[in-house]
Amino acid sequence: MSAVPPWLDDLLWTYRNVVVSLGVNGLLALSMYAVLAAGQLSLGQAAFMGLGAYASALLTLRAGLPFWAVLPLSPLVPVGFALLVGGPTLRLSGIYLAIATIGLGEVLRAVYLNLDVLGGALGLSGIPESAPLWLIFALLAVALLAFWRLGRSRIGRAMEAMREDETAALAMGINVRRYRLATLLASAALAGLAGALSAHATDFIGPNDYGFEPAVAILSFALLGGVGSPLAPVLGAFLLTLLPEALRGFADLRLVLNGVVIVLAVLFLPRGLLAWRMRRRAA
Amino acid sequence: MLAQQLVNGILLGATYALFALGFTLMFGVLRVINLTYGFYFTAGGFVAWYLTTRLGVGLALALPAAAVAAGAIAVVLDTLLLRRLRRARAGELASLMVTLGAVLALYAGMTALLGPDIRRLPPDVIGTGALVLGPVRVTQAQLLILGASVVLAAALVWLVRFSRLGLGIRAVAENPDVAGLMGIDAARIAALVSFVSGALAGAGGVLIGLAFNAIHPYMGEAMMLRGFVVIIMGGLGDIFGALLAGLLLGVVEVLTAGYLDSGLKEAVGFALLVLVLWTRPAGLFGRPVARRA
Image (cartoon, rainbow over the protein chains, first blue to last red):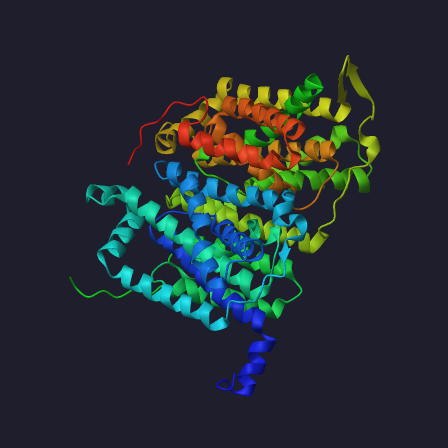
């Protein structure tokens, strides 16, 4: 740790939880961005995160796998659930996916609570803190870069076309269903990764960490930023993670803030607070 | 044993059906998944709690008062949140998101103001006696719920199918613009539907708060999972479908808890939802609808 100056080391130590939340929430905001950018609404981001967290904790604690093996394996569980729930709903109107994913979060909370293998109400503790801070931010940077590159490609344009007008996109020969399934699975994988990282950065996970409130909070990150570029939702997440630190001890007020942000963003700022759009070279 | 389980299932199902009626009505007419619906349920429970414990009012007065209060809240929230989106012809996802944000703010705000504690209606608002028929036992609270569900569902069907207002409601559900051209005030119909849905939810909150003996800010949220399962199983916007799906869900949950494992109750409901989406997405009793641009 000699490379890090002592004041920075102290700062990181004191605010470690906040720093972890920044990185994890940034990843979650990107996972929300992935679905919103394709014009669909999944409210299962917190549920997917929880599945990744529980899968990773069980793989570490019960199966004894090393962290480098756990990290790529655990997102497979949320991807499987996304396939189960998203498969049928993508043929239907967008509200079905939203309802099914919000229901997924509710039901998983009940399952975690009731199954003793999953720790019940006590959750799972004693998870080794094997996710270093730099790794969280490195993965965030990689994901951001990937979305940035994607946004400027043919795929990104197809997604934007679907978001703006689904029927027109279909008429242009875009395979809307396939793109939507792909973005949903990518988003579930990313949320699962965020869950595995946060579980291995905080040593404890519980059944109430992935329910209704975090699901809404993740949506508020993305809507505050807007979906004009992948950076915007990440900045939205940073803002909404740092701002309420001033409101510590008033958890309810934090949630009110998340809710109000969504209401105001949808009603008055449909393009988000950071409403610039990614620049494109002329084709 | 089985007879009692089935009766319990039907009584539980009646509460789910009662909860989902207004939810599905709102979607059927206004074409929005209004997630603030759970809050009307909470609000109804709290109004009845306040009236009975603080003012000593009887249930016969507290129940309709709670329903009216919840209906009024529904109209206010619809006006604040959804009218602007309806006018701008925003997509269905925009209204879903706005109500999602609003409902979290409402639950959390209420918790911050009133605390998360579980409140109970005074035990003397309803008799403790029970009806015993052979091996089957039914409490007075359960009977009240069953009776109220039947009466409210019948009243709703009458309103929508047979009254002049119902004709307007169905016209708006079919096509708000054309209804407007026919001289129907679509904004007034929207307010009316919000009021009726909110009142149904409020009444549901009182009755279910009574049956489960627990009233707390997030009680509506806890009920939403059942609401989703019921309205999708019944077919979005289908009142009869919601009634049948509610009863079915209640019976399935009670049988699961009785014969398998009580921890699987919620999971079974959700599994039903996913199964319906895969096999009969228009609902168990619905017919597929052509998709329009």
